Each structure stands twice: as structure tokens, then as C-alpha cells.
Length: 473
Ligand code: URP
Ligand code: ZN
Ligand code: ZN
Image (tube, rainbow, N blue to C red):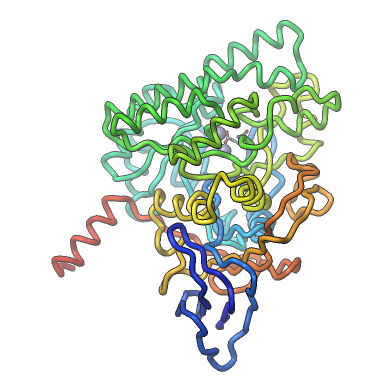
């Protein structure tokens, strides 16, 4: 099956040029001006549009069992919605219960993800520790293409990683050439503040941000970075939401640490006032962790993205509908934490990044796709427009507009935190390994067509390179 994308302007993380792109059997076969159309090829007219690597969302939670319920978006509906917004790959999370065998959990998530329409990988959360976890991390890294391990420093009493666990898992990650990642919030502090607020009678969603102050995030970011510094391992901090955490990343980077930060579209664009909404359902729909913050944090996060101290953008797509959020009607600590956005991230980043001059189109590609591919070691298969790369592409119409709404989105959730926001710049066509899955409003995502993408550890990549150069088998 071949598709020729004709007449567009190719935008990569480092170049912009006029070229046609020929996709054959799922790969990019040729890039150049006025390419000849092979017999039987489908021609896609990209005149006046950009052709960019499809988005990679490195932080999603499809059908996650969490806080007594299960996220409403499954791997099919979620990845289909992603394609409608120009995102062609996700990295989701395997989250074992404490004491659950991590290989068993991994197999469960692999089973659930069979129906994915887009390509996907997994970070595996380390939620407990013993010798089997140590050994199984090796199996995952060596045999299953897992090169990143996640640590939740929050969610005490559930999946929280304490300092001892961080020490062991970071050390093991270093041994394996894998990347430790953290959700940085001081879980003890959050737990105590939650108890205090509830005892004082503050039971509504307005208590949520008060129980998770910026300092709790800054402290955890600093602690994780200091562990990484001492152990000598890189560190990736997910959903950085405060200048407090960003400052810790900046400090670590300027001291020579390999420290990376991810920012969510939501944290860039939504502020904490949403928790004051008198409509309980609307306020609860915004309950996610870390919470939305005061506007000065948003300004700092944009600067972090511009300066390169934050490298990736994600959504933490984790959908709970109103009936699920209602589990916490009398106690905000029981509201399932999570919000959506996998469909909207690209348009929001274009509108508020490129549209405002904060990001160039090339920087947009870097922060929505290429940087994630590089950090998680799937570049140039993903995040790249080059001959031989997967033909995961988005044809981007910079003039197209829409108003985001739960009434029209494809995500399986009954609200949208970006409701009513107007965006300019939209995916007109999305191609997943050369197959058109979104064509001018027509969603053609195919259930089960997504492939699991193995992500070799950094050691494995270097070993493979060394074998190639020395000719050893
Ligand atoms: O509120 C959130 N973010 N829910 C999903 C789990 C997590 O912390 O990433
Ligand atoms: Zn988190
Ligand atoms: Zn998350």
C-alpha cells in the first residue's frame, strides 16, 4: 500500500523544506520535490499544509484501574481519538499493584492494548521492591523493550514509592541502561494535608489544590534529582506543573545532570481557578494530580519549554466520566484523579505555541514528537521524517479552526477540560505507518492495527552499535 503526500512543506525538528513524501508498506520510501507517482499509489494533496512527524504522547493511561474505578477510555477509543488530533503513538503505563508480580502486570497491559489503533509502548511503574522485582526489571529491559521505569512519589497507601524504593529502582535502572521517571509530589505531605482539610470540613474539589501545594512538588523533584545525582542515573520528571519543580530541573541541568522534564497541555493552559467553579461536576472534572496551578506557574512552564529545560509535552490522558468523579462527592480525596487531552494536545500546542510566537514550527515538532522519540530511544523509527522511518505523519492545516468541545470530541469522556477553547491549526490527515487513519474529519482508525514498539535500553543500543562497527554477531 502506497501513499504519496504531494505539495506540502515538510517540517521536522530541525528543517523546513518543500517536498513530496512517498510512503510504501508503512515506511517513508522517498522524500523530494515532484516525486513520481508509482502505479496504484493514493495521492494526498497537502498543498498549503505542513507535513510533520505524527505526535507522540509519552504519558497516557488508557483503561487504567485507579482509585476504585477504571479509566473510561480504552486503548482503541483513546488511540483513535489521538489520531483525530494528529498523534500517532503513545507511551502508556503498566502500573502493578504493590506485591503484584511486575511481569504479570506487564502481560495484562499487553493484553488490554491489543486493540490499540496506534503504535504504543509502556513505561513500567515500580510500586514495590524485592529480589523478584530486581530480576523482572532485567527481563523487561532485555526481552520486552522496556527502557523506562516509573515511580509515583505520591498516592500514599496505594502505589507510592518511598526513598528506599527509589534508591533500589534507580540503581537497577542505571545497571540496565534504563530511564527512571517520577511523578514528583511529596506523598506524605499530601496525605497529611488531605486529612487536615477534610477534618476542617473542606470536602469539595477546592480542597484538592490546597492539599498538593507547589512546595510538595518542588521537594519531591529535588529529592528525586538528588537521588539521581548521587546514583549517577538520568531522570525524567513527568507532568512538571510548577516553577518550583522546574527550578530544580534547571539547577540539576546546569550542574551537568541529565535531567528531563515533561509538561502537560493542561498545565500550560489551565489555572487553579477551575477548582472554585460552583458547579461541583465541573470542578471535579478538573481534579488531577498535580493540580492546575496559579497563572505564574503557567508562564514559567512556557518559558521552560522555550528554553529547552522542559523537552516534551504530554497529556496524562486518564479519563473519568461524571459518574466516576461522583465517587468523591463528599470527600475530594476520593475523586478519581485524571483528565483527558490526547486528541487536543497538538492543536493546543500549535495555537498557543506557534500561534503566539513562543515556538517555531520546528520547535513544535521537537516538543510534540521528536524529543520524546529521542529520550525514549525510538528515534528515528518514530518522531522523524526520513527515508526508512515509520510513515507516522500528520498533514497539518495551519489555517483550520475549531472550538474544542466534549460534544464533538472523539475521546470517551463526557467532559473536556479545554471546553470552549478555540484552536487554529489542525490535523487534516493523519497517517499511521502509511495508512490514512484520519482524513478531513473522517476517523478511520483500525482497532488492533497498532503495534507494540520495543524501546531498547541505552546499553542495548550501544552494544548493537558496537557489534555493527566491529562486525561481531
Ligand atoms: O491525576 C492523574 N495524573 N492521574 C493519573 C495518574 C498520574 O498521577 O499520572
Ligand atoms: Zn502522575
Ligand atoms: Zn499519569
